[in-house]
Length: 132
Image (cartoon, rainbow, N blue to C red):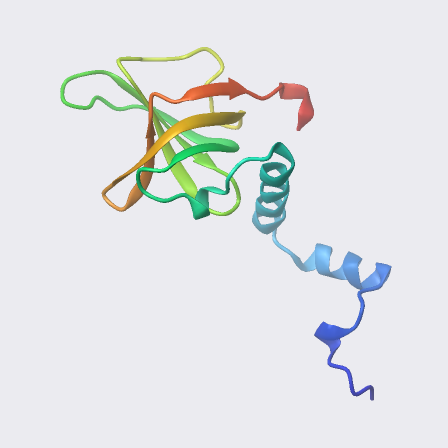
């Protein structure tokens, strides 16, 4: 037996393949989203703080029409592999291209609402569909 624990040994091709096969699909998608965040030069959602101006990227997991104070509001959950963020467009019932599974980059000021990060009326850029 080797004195070096298995976790400290350099991983060979076979070991990396076994690790990948034993990892869940959700973990693999989260890892890919975290890599996308780094390559886009955006801040990880998990690192965002209240009242901070940020640029984040991720995949929309849900899109819902949920009125706030009697005003229509389109609400979407953006996930980047580290955490989730609610993106809310006030006064909108729908926006072309804002749909579950779509990747986007959003910029604005983070606020906290009921313990969740929220980004109201952000500047946003839809990522190309063919990139996935």
